Image (cartoon, rainbow, N blue to C red; front, side):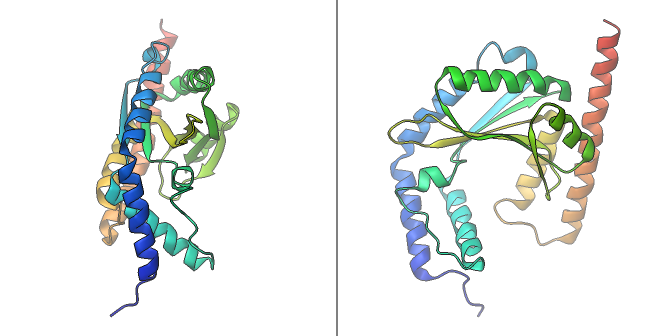
Length: 231
């Protein structure tokens, strides 16, 4: 029998963390409601297609903590996530997503999002970062002053992390992506989350879908560019 990469003691610690999270669900429900209210602003409405949100499922949190414990051990580090720092160290317990149709909408969306967070006097923990894998997207975000990070999983999305900065601080992650990228994300999530598929054919097909998704976004961009030229 293969040896477990983490100890029984670490597994018990992870179970305690998940229980702590469950015991504080009301905090995350209230924060999620506040985030939804903030990004339902009329200022955003003309630039977006739709929004989605979720509070992380306890079993998904457990899977994530196990992965982190394995990563810590592989790096020769102690797993140091505790009940006291859980809500600070795991920043996607509340997730919100803004979907838009074409790339040029992002410039306005980004400005409005940052303005709304500032007006609410919330604290940005991580400035917007575009995770992307292709050069055209990287160049576009760089022109807007958005930091980029290589996306090995071949998706494009801009991530923000912020907190309400209250006594019981908890963070939320906002993702902004095109509707085409959302299709890729939903397929990949079903196949690779929380555990990556072991089927090489699926992995290759998802890479192909990523390339098709990128092409679809560019085609939609071109359609709207042509339409606006004729206005």
